[in-house]
Image (cartoon, rainbow, N blue to C red; front, side, top):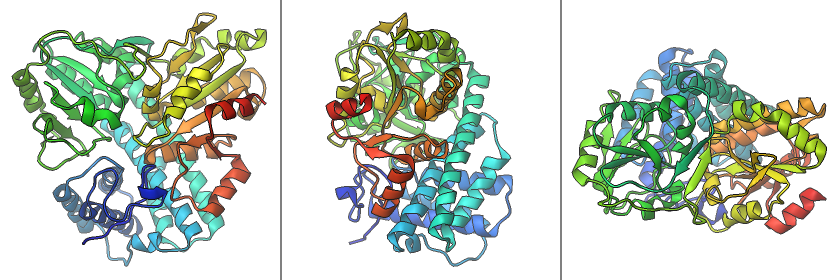
Length: 510
């Protein structure tokens, strides 16, 4: 029986590593092919100059190996062939990293997995025509670092640089999204589904949604977002389409239940695709780096005709269908990016000074299937009425259908967007610290984060690079972080695991 080793995501088996098959659903063959692709990308970075073609290969290849992106062995083999053709001769196998000293392995994993997250954000920016020389150069530097015999101190320095470069990349993507589609504006989004043909779009890619909206104009098809696509309703150039109707379902890990026999087409633009059930496999379409065996892939021409035809064939629901979020609410509010939040910053500052606002929480990150994630629902429910809750990424589906009320006219729950919109949260925190003439760590601000995959890793590294302390992380700590490295992070940055909502809130309020 073919063996594998993978410990890059939060759900990894026994919190140590998947060795028989991936909990995410990938087979040992696919896992080993992804390792082979990673090895060939490291060879390319070590032997070839920084060119547009080589950089594109590195970014696409790294993105392909993120959890829940590509389950298709044939397409990964094609990627390997492309990279090998471009790479020079060098003896390197990623297994040498998995089998080395646990602290070195831990630090190299932080760099490599963080780099995969940066690759995802760089990919989205590039799709919109935005690039950065410094970000591009770092793909070569970091992959070379993973292959070299560096000391723990040298690797820790590269770990923090990974966070620095990710901040630059998130800033680039923020500019790409807002200059292309306008700055997000607060929007109320229904979870109810109207009768008639519809398409559900999931993932993160704004351009794919924009192209689909344009191609479905006047065709009698409604478009619904899913998961991390929810924030698209806030962008002026996307919400101008009247057939962008609402949001279907909740976060990615519920898709097998929510998509079961759905009378609609489903388009996956990025992670997270779960193993596809037979009850809806015939209506699943993938594009960009996402691929799954026996489903239709939309190529670079972005002709979504097969998706449109399938939606028309299936016909949608016969009657309007009321649906709700996890807590029974049917309205989700989004669109509180940095521009919107900073426009009401004087109100926030005044509320803090007057005592009406006692604390701000950032409760966000990835969602997942493992038990224990209801911690985040309970935590938000327990936050006092004189506190604000900022949120982002798909972890918000645990509580984003709850009405928490307002403080001086400001909603208590502010959805800042996708995972990459951590940039918005950081920008707001920095501006508030300037207003109060203190450091971010001295603000009445607490970060309570959930993680699942590699984009969460690079965001965490960005927060560490910025020197932000007292981050609570859950539901479990990364399997690839060794006890010694965890001690360094705990000592240097005061990072800590979540405990219970009650206990953590008591400790926060001291």
